[in-house]
Length: 257
Length: 256
Image (cartoon, rainbow over all chains, first blue to last red):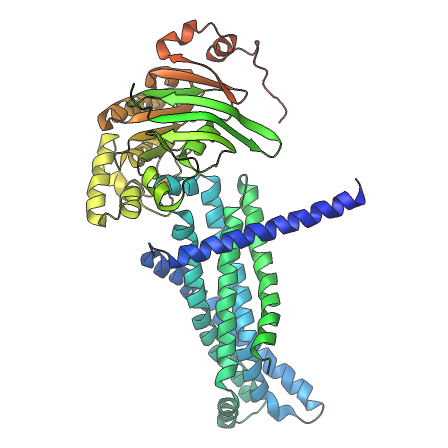
């Protein structure tokens, strides 16, 4: 095939996907703000997206805080700055690792589950059935998941932040011989509100990305089991990439002084 | 002359370069039962989905009760959707909800009925299709194929629709269960006083549930007439189809 035709086709495909995603996002946002609002479904989704993700987010945050303390201690040791561990741990967790780790965990757990569920509904005509029962599938399926993810993620991240700091504390005090009360005081004095709120804003955006990519890929799955499998993969991969890309953009915006 | 319940005028639809509907003209009279027959992949499902608004046709007009519904959206679309009930080929039951909530779904979500009242109606509709109250609290995945079809039928008639669509209602069922479902379709449609539009390639079912039959081939309606006239259509395509012969004017695409 002609090289220009090939490049052209690839560019067109990418543009078509961006256009379709933009349209889908617009419909989803319209579905969130216009009645009917399904409060019951939002609560159910908050349980599934937020509450059931607590163990995985808590565990990863704990180990992340621990390994962060260890690395900073070993690195700081090279120029006699190992005392800085509590400050860097709390900054790294609240600003970056808390929201990003929670986001990536949710991308694996929730984006996959949403894409698989909605994809199966799509290929078994359940989404068409919703339409025939005078129910808008975007409002019924997409809006509650996005609202639930956007609300749940900051709460999850706040809990993850606390557990992450605790992970750093446990490693520092029990393995690196830090004084426990001095560690906590240094953490408390150093962290600003801005550090924490910037992380929570990121978390809300990551929640939006995860729910949106799960729903979008689920709605666009084709064929049978293989199509649903592909949708699940795309949902996890695309939301993970978008989370890291959005993280950079948000950091640049939030800390641009 | 009465206004037709459903009227399709020159409906065309293509997917990519594949023309599926190439100018379909079809009229369904009020309280009649029309069955569209045709081979796999001839656009029977696309025809129904176009009327339901799940697929938007590229050209042509679709009228319901004389109202042009081809391009309506939002609240206007919701109002028209409330006239419709649909039995899907695979049942398309919501597996996250118990049976009764599947049947009551249109009443609760579409019409805002209280859950307790909707549940009573759901149980009453389930009784109409021969299912007892204890089935109402099972999950759809616990039911056999025939029972799922019955629940799908109960869901389709739950809100007393004016028009009911049946997508291959007997596909995948054993002959006895297929006949039971056919009887249920005839009795429920009569009971509700609805207009029925079905698609099938099961001729036994088509003969039993229809007043009129239309045959779709090559994206067009090539023959239509009363069910009693199907054996004397004088149309070689229809003859080949209803007798299920490999030899004849219809060439099946073996390779897609």
